[in-house]
Length: 347
Image 1 (cartoon, one colour):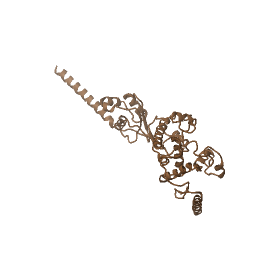
Image 2 (cartoon, rainbow, N blue to C red):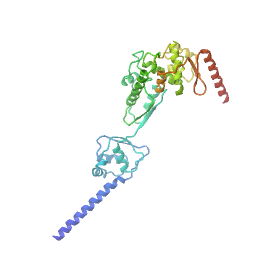
Image 3 (tube, rainbow, N blue to C red):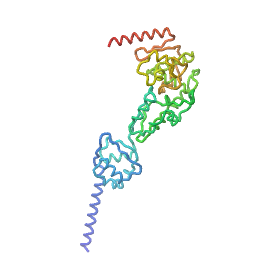
Image 4 (tube, one colour):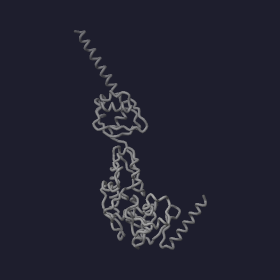
């Protein structure tokens, strides 16, 4: 009987020791180094179990042997609240770091930067080159994208569906598996809100029939100057010209209308060629915006400076010289040409 009790005691001690050793090995597993490659990403699908996670870690060569992982997750359920998503493994050193990341749900973020003054054609290229973004619009026309974005028909030609001008310039963050349409919808909603705000709070007596005309003029202001402080003054020139029934005579609209034919120079022939966007030929505004305007340009059109300027020309310092009549304007042009020639000869 005594020998039997000793045997039982020894067995209990052995089992306890084995259990303690197993517990130690499992809990120490979190300290296992993880082999992470530069810029490595890890995608966790919804419903991934502990055993599937262990297999995934091995397949991604993060660890050599993951057989203890399922036991660790059962032993420590607080580490088993893993969230589906795609994660950047930057700064992940150990299994503990990796599990903490997957439990946090902090997916990797990418971004697209859309700059004011660029066109929808430019922005589509940015979308197509964006990493880890699901492409759904490559074969879609501008008309189809217009409809998908649920943009309002507020133009003078209700059949004209043009995305140009309707997107808000900014940097947009996204997670993998987001779609190109998702980003455009976010941008379009912001522009609709910014335009509605500018239109509803606009000054009285603006010669603009609807919000779309404000969007068109804001895009012209955006292209004419990169100096935020003078946008309201530039807007005043165009507002004054519209009120006086003068042609806008703005080069950026001509360039936009030339499309692929523009090679960096505008010739006299280009200024005389009739296109819907040649404001040296047409009366009033072109049919659509010519670029994506900033909110600053929208506000400049909504609240232009009160001036008697009808002309402006580059002053050589990045800004413009504003004048009241053609005689003053021609003098300002000659001043600019003298400055330009002196700079050219100094090279």
